Length: 315
Picture 1: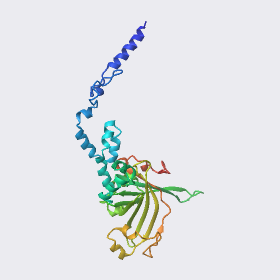
Picture 2: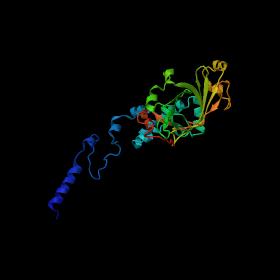
Picture 3: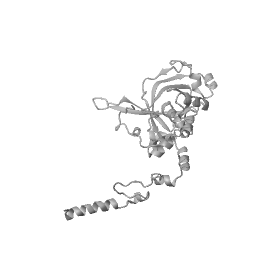
Picture 4: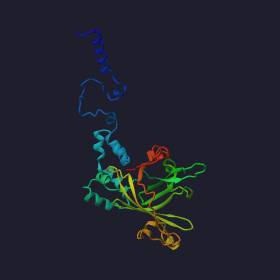
């Protein structure tokens, strides 16, 4: 025979299980042990009962591919709906717009089994929804003054690249942190902010890019990169293979029409067309680029000062 204390505990448990929760009452569900849905044909989710499938389809059609990936984790219905090829076709044609629609359709048919989603995940592509950042450090000796040993300083600087689908990109080399630079990494930036524009090409996973440093002695910066990702579809790393600066003649500069990449495409690594500006192949500051989406610019660890992150391994 149960005691009064045991009866009170059982009563409290029953009262707890029978109590309706305000947040669950929106769905018409009460917490009961072993409760099941009486009608399996009715979707219990309130958003699916209130939102027609046609309107849900229109919402998905206006989302970015990475937002679609997050939405696919919500429920089974969304996961299967988001696999519709129409959501991925537009994203693929925009990401590889320089290839052309006809060539993209041929590739998806013969190389990716007709799946635009598979093409989006497996084909190397540059990302346009953020910045690629390379964090570099070096040691600089300080002034000894009255001390016996010389002090040393860890100097940190960054290389920033922002790509556009049209084949153009922006480049900046600065000691400013990510959240400060991201505000003016656009084509409206002035020359005082030292943001330079150039052209690039993507062939498989190889990126060729070139920009012009204006001045009394114009200098061309040629960049070779290799694109990779930490997982399928990430494309969040750029390995810096070579960084070469070389001179250029004024006559060639006038004939280039602003496209430095097309002019230096056949140049050798040590080739220069201005004897006052010899070709230099830089061997320092070649840390891989890490991709940072715009929504993570303010919270990225790349904003940390040197005393909190003196060394950074991009992976």
